[in-house]
Each structure stands twice: as C-alpha cells, then as structure tokens.
Image (cartoon, rainbow, N blue to C red; front, side, top):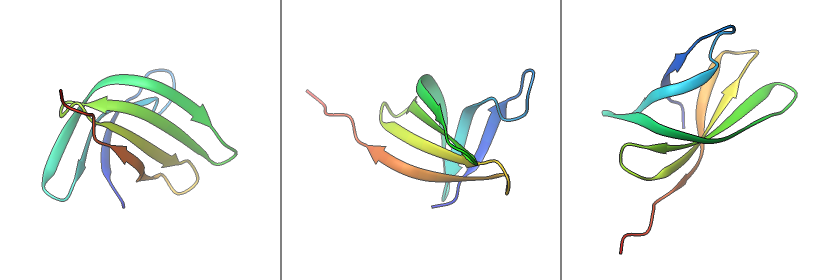
Length: 76
C-alpha cells in the first residue's frame, strides 16, 4: 500500500515521518518506536494518533513510501 508521508528533515531529507495518509485518512505520528536500515530502504515503527502501531518503509532510490505492517493496539 502506497502512502503519502510528511517528514521531518534535519541534516538529511526524510529523517523521520511526522504524519502519513492513506485513502482519505491522515495520521499524526505520536512516537517513533524504532528505525532500522537496509541497503536501499529504511523502516520506521511508529505509534500514530489512533494508538495503533505502523511500520512504514521508505525506498531511498525511488523516494517512495509503503505500509509494511499494521497492528491494532488491544483495548482494555
């Protein structure tokens, strides 16, 4: 699934996502949990403002984002 992602860019472009949208819904990133790199991509595990966990994948060469994983947080 392709996404539109807005990022914070400090000393380099697309340093970390601050919000993302899919379909007609926009999500704000509340917390960056983890980040790891591959040869041509970077993964970001985030908690969004709906309190669910998303893993966003950024492809450096093509400058594209996709949703790699989604986990709905359990409610008590």
